[in-house]
Image (cartoon, rainbow, N blue to C red; front, top):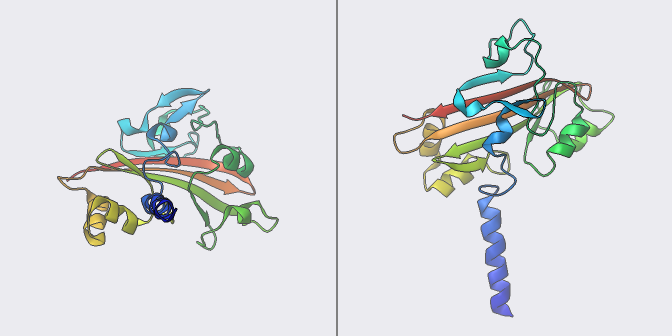
Length: 196
């Protein structure tokens, strides 16, 4: 019985240390692609840069800026005008950052649903891909945990994460939902690929 307890403890420890690397919580690359009417429109890994869903905005100098009048969605059907409740339902269990745009304070999802929710905030999802291995980058899986998983010092990992190296190909995927008064007013997806 004691051996079973030790084995169970070790299994729980391994799961806790591994964070969300390699499990279903990590948003896969196709989650960051751009869809229209439920069909793939653009695969973002095809071109590094920013994909701003506000195609009619004059300031849109992003990859989607040339597609005026299109209504884009995420793979899970979130569009401009969707509610925070729809985002929560579609991305339940997926690690995220929620940031008050006025104060810069990191919030919990309950803050966004309360009657005293900030007027403007954003919900962000991040996936880092290092040599093909996916990591969900959140408060719960910070740079220290990723560096440890890769067998690197924190400083070496931070240098690689921001500029790549010959040994490590680092890809950054992010999806941000900008919310005002409980509704999405913009969606921004970015893809960057770093290799020295």
